[in-house]
Image (tube, rainbow, N blue to C red; front, side, top):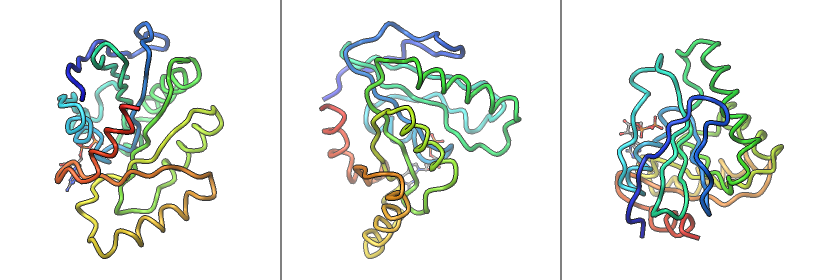
Length: 189
Ligand code: GDP
């Protein structure tokens, strides 16, 4: 489905983005939500991990997919041990990307399936809504939720987020591969 995926740009500064291709989708979520694991599973790419080194400068990473589009790995947010200054820098870069990157078509927002959406997740949703950027929700680590609990958990997350709008939800597990096919189809669209 995806043949060649190549990191072609690591952006640390506003506006330092590659020329647009036909499609562009971005992946966002809290640190540790499982974003690297998911991108790895979906695209077979090894994401440079920053979670083990929180002091390291965050970047927006552009991956060229079959010369058809970019998948964009956004820096994970909500990392407690990052300085205020660093957080501000990151927020400025991300804001610039969201506001000025007209080729951005869709964001997949990753939320841990086990927990209720957190303040930072809600803030991200409100931000995307304000900027009128379409997004869908990916619920990660599905394998960690008991089968008998899944519907209940999903309903709980939906009810929390229903105050902010109606969204599509993709429960996935990068470990077992559950839900990955459905998500891949959506990305291909
Ligand atoms: P990131 O910081 O969002 O890139 O998160 P990572 O992909 O590094 O994952 C954080 C932790 O969660 C790691 O220990 C992963 O092994 C684990 N993890 C990620 N996805 C899954 C999943 O689908 N199932 C399980 N059981 N663990 C996962």
